[in-house]
Length: 211
Image 1 (cartoon, helix red, strand yellow):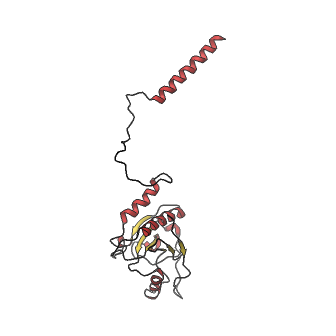
Image 2 (image 1 turned 60 degrees about the vertical axis):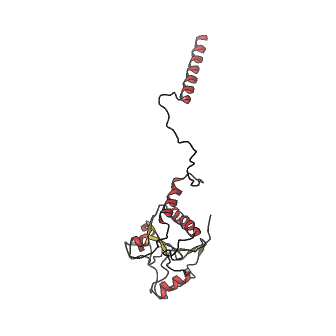
Image 3 (image 1 turned 180 degrees about the vertical axis):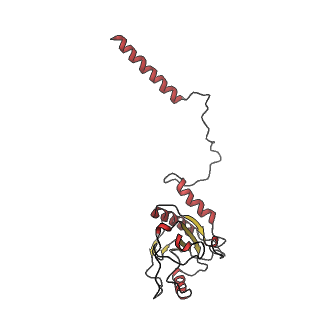
């Protein structure tokens, strides 16, 4: 299901004298999943990033609330300080799920919305981004032990392997396994085609003889 997407980039606190470095979209090859580590809303997080960390603005590109609402926090071309390791500040789009996933799992709406946003970013950038996690590159608990990493990756991958409009489903135990053609048995389609061809040739010969 689609979730609301609200651009609040002009409403979030920014530093009065610092400005975001330019982020070249050609360098974006990853999407990094974060959790906020607290139950604060994105407005509180942005204020802390500016006042507590002395950054130019909020670290995250997008934030996803408990009900799946997506908050666009800054432009894709604005670099945020969200991960010190592995040049991720320059090569990854950070998407943050509200909450402390060391204490609880994200909501179903949050996971559904995150999967949608990753697929959307892939489409808009014209390439598939690697899905990476904050604590893969720096010593931190983020995005939390209850973040369903395997499910998120699986569902994004399924989007690219399923036919259009198809839904993932569990296999039916009563459904017979598909079988390979038996090379010892004649192919009925080829047999019908051959017989039709022979009949056409015989008709042409009979017509020529009648001339």
